[in-house]
Length: 490
Length: 135
Image (cartoon, rainbow over all chains, first blue to last red; front, side, top):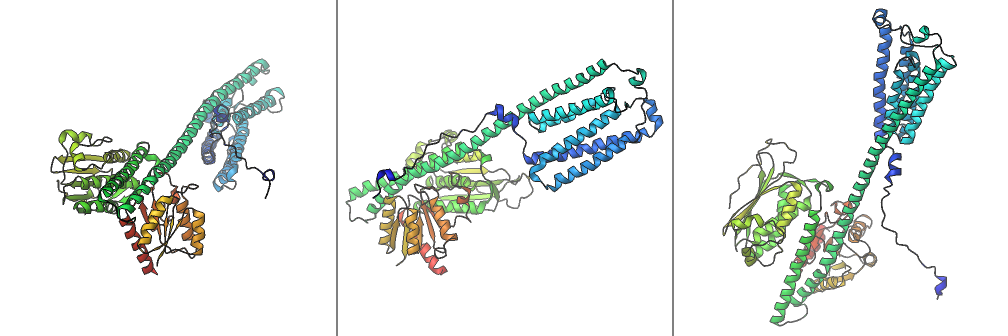
């Protein structure tokens, strides 16, 4: 036998309840957009680039008509707009091909970066030819700065801004400081020609003025974008928490139902053994006691089920449920089959007039709804009474179901209260003691969940009719009246 | 004599059910956990399996056993399964989507606890006769 020391103890440390990391201050700023969104953005950039290409071509073409540009005192641009448009077209086709072919699905970010770098280089060329400091063309860099703030993280958008500044500075330096490039301008007479030695201080102020504006725009745009993303991140996290809580609650409900019902099932089974003579003869008085035990445990089981169903329905939203198309005939006949044993016991007969009509919802909820209404109709019918189930398509193609009985009925002043939890009329209690008063509250909750309109019509002592109007499945009013039929009013 | 296997962790309930069914002339074996049930089925396949759904270690163990009988085991494939559970509403009380998928949950019949013995006797007789008719 192994000694206690030789057995390695198994260790388990209870983890703390896992909290989702909501360090949005840090996370929100670094969250990147989803791949599909980045892909859409890459394609959108390419589409917008066609407009830029078209603008360049138009400018080039316009430049060929001297008269028209002379009027604005603009120089003929020559061929550079066509060259720029050509280069941009080639790159745009490559980017489009890569984005659509999805040869590197996880590398879409490189596609975007490639587009931005190419755009900045081409833009710097355009800025040079149009006049880097003589016109406001340099502010077109702002488009890329703002877009990068929207699509990239704050750090990445700063990189784009710095790249724009470096390229613009290189252009200015090459043109005005190092003078390795000839001065260019779209105007016939630029200030270079008027003042052969431009004031370096003016250029420097203009340059830093432009850079300053870009940095301010970057700061504002990236900050706004970060705030929007942080909010988005928080909403996503909250949503995840809600979904997790909903799942946890459903699991808890399941376990609670089981734990509460299972002991009563055992009590009921054992009581049945005694009642049915499996354990020998029992005196009549004892049998009556056992009968009461059986009856109460059965009733309690039903009540537990109904209370849990009600709690579950009250905290359920329709969006969280899977919807399916349900055919009225299958549904109503199944529900009727559930109530058949009680009906036989009470001598109540069904008259069924159900047309096949499609309903949309969660099948188990509709089953709960109709089983409750049908069992009420049977229970509160007189002996040998009739329950009429009718289903047809209404004038707006909406499914309409009516359940009518010729039972005890409800007094008019009590009708508004029948859907309240645990409410039971005195007449109902006298007629049937074994009810929780939760059945119609469940019906009300299901109706609210699916937008079902319920109309109750009752004649005290003669019977009650429930009319349920479901929302039309696909909102096509009046397209089909074939299923319409008439149902009697009890 | 048809051989029935009841798999239920509730010993009280399982033994009363077994008493009733034995009185009907069936050979009834009770297993209180899934592992023992699997061993028992492999050594002697039953004519009908009566399964609970929730077990202490796994809330869907009954469904999983039903699936493994249908999909993994050749000799247990055609055994009718009667699901007998305290849960009557499959959704939205928390079973997973696969558990509520009818094609995935190959259960022949579903009965809710507490069950009337008359209903149970009728259901068992029906399942056994339809299975022998299929054979």
